[in-house]
Length: 169
Image (cartoon, rainbow, N blue to C red):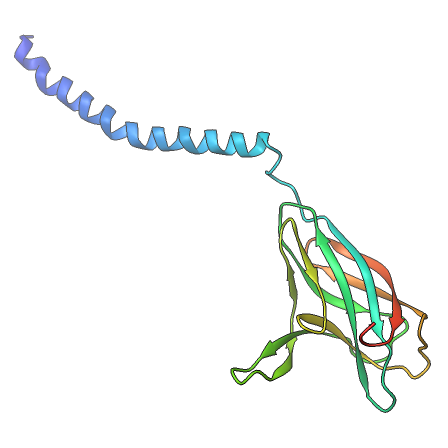
């Protein structure tokens, strides 16, 4: 073959190599990023849920429901959600609520299917953010301990005792 016959073949090879270079570089860059992410301990860390500061407001006389509050921390690298709260000491339905404000500044409670807990973050329930709405029991007194089971999407079930406190304390 003459040298001029090699030119189209070389050109095709060069074009093919250039066309393959971009995806190969992208894969190498992505693989390097994932390796660094894994080496720093951020890959695959599941949600790690902890519950503290569990409080149940002492029900007011004649009011059919009260509120429970929990400080839920997530030390894991994946977000989680509080899906359900139950208690062997409560008759009736317990529900999750978030608190909202109207444009006029009035507050109202809105039922929530779940409450998010961010990765490396905290859900700190309060009368100004979110709570667990609980049917009131007249037998509860300040200082009583009421058992609750919190069920999370990824973190499973966590059992906690909430202390009955006066609102505002």
